[in-house]
Image 1 (cartoon, rainbow, N blue to C red):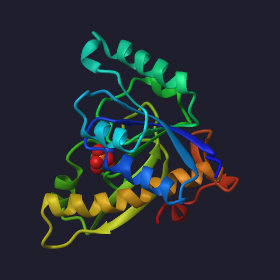
Image 2: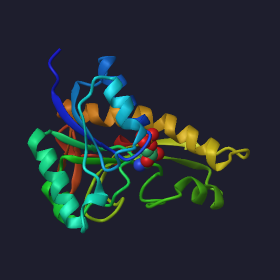
Image 3: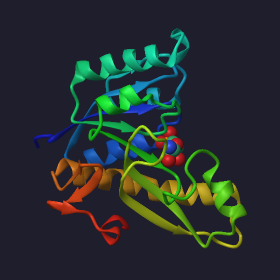
Length: 214
Ligand code: GRF
């Protein structure tokens, strides 16, 4: 099978989304190849999981740089060396500067554990519970310089149960993430989705809100 989408995956932690993407590729559900798994933390658990899968890994440790701009440039140069079609943020916990984001605009995607534009930032599950939301979920989106504000490719909605704790809700959203990220990447791999003039296009026209909910 010819891989159609060359991906670099950026992680900072456990790497469960990375594994879900790797699984989807192995299962033939996603026509892609993970060319490199890159972490800003040498101790990210996902690095070992990636290596165990035979994936190439690298670390650009943010603590080795005196400024965010220098770190971003080092990261950019490693990624450019691979020349990927898509840069996949999968639990990457560093904010990337505008120059980096602009450099990869249209090729840089993220998964966020909320139904954006609701709950950008951290602690999304706790905030959704505190607000007594009936539903919560995750969003795969193109990254723009403004944090968690990029155009949404697709969202997956999960119910909030009366018995939910932060942990149980997070767990249910994570299951949805593991389905949503490979699906969104497959839309990109198939050439069905792209970013055009700041909007997500699906099948040659601007995506409608109902296209984005799976
Ligand atoms: C996920 O919940 C993702 O939405 C958020 O960070 C978490 C990463 O988890 N951006 P993992 O490292 O993929 O397991």
